[in-house]
Length: 400
Image 1: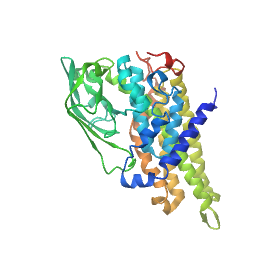
Image 2: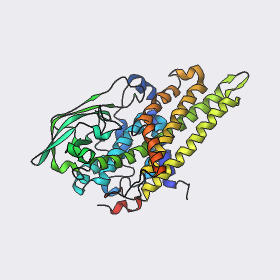
Image 3: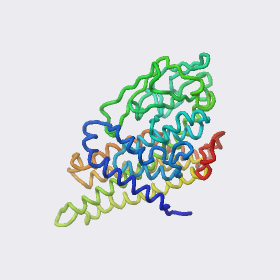
């Protein structure tokens, strides 16, 4: 076991941290208050090679390992959850899914421009009546000659108004239940597609989130991802990547909570001494540190399994569950440490608390992950090799 980061990974962290400090930190309070998503951040991330950091160079990416993606997500969420979410969706849920399941023509047409950051990708799975229960989705894709007719609605879709390409899941045969779900690559410009942003969110207000609508959208047959009926399998594999990035982001949020709290502990005096000298405040700081270290180990363990091309559903689920819970608790404690000031947006910790709730819910609620982990231990759940695995990092340059 090697717990050391490489020189390249350390340089990457410094690059992303510098970007966050310069491009996000000075503006995020205003973006959050106004609910504004700044689309100029995405091209700036692309200039640094961060929109396809773990995608092979032959497909337009930076060719780094999967833990490099974790580093990017950590540091972006230290700035704000909205920008980690953008990379999670674009790279983790969309581009890595194309790398795993796409044919060569699809990779050339869609993956390469996404990895370069010329185009933005998003992911359309959740529906008004289908969240954790994916099989309850209502969207349909009916075969008609050399194309499919797509109808339906998606909700809580990140980058809904910003993305150019969407991975969309719909039933091609409802009689087969989840075995009748298929996956499609859909372009924003196609007739019958529309989107609408959601307002009034508790947190991640600087992010673009909303609904997608499909009204008789003609999807070419060549935009079917994988085979008909493989959609559920593709979605679950995609979530392994998405959950990995969410867990890494949670590590970044704990870092942010810890940094803000330590700073405040040295600034604020009560009862004649810095509040950091009070033992119950120290207890909260200690819990943050423990959560940070444990979460980081779980995340990078899952990333190493990805590097080796191994199934990591169990390990990624555990990392996502625990890291997001630790982040939620860290944010709550950070507000407590700040006292009344923590209840005001004069300090960033109230934003951290609001932002920390969504990751506990999306990409598998804490309840879903609790059940998954118990079923693994009890022997009720077992993961098999997929017919198309995410390429191991060492061999990604050879994948075609």
